[in-house]
Image (tube, rainbow, N blue to C red; front, side, top):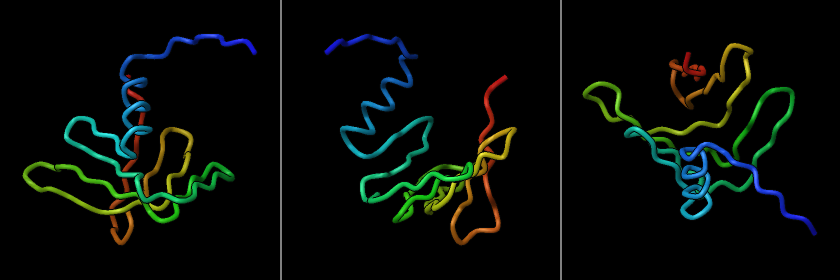
Length: 95
């Protein structure tokens, strides 16, 4: 078998390593907890999590804890549908 190293950005490597070790990813005061995740389904540009993943973040002076079940590719970004909330989040690449 051949092993071929591919370099990736250090931040990405750290995030994936932490996810594999703990089931959680933390960045800039935000955390995503995949530790209870049993199944990920990807189809038609939609990723579904079963059970939903837990997220924590600070929005101004407020701390928010909720879950997400679905992330959709909508072309110009990734739409994160926050469970039981009228607010969704659009993740876009930095310019």
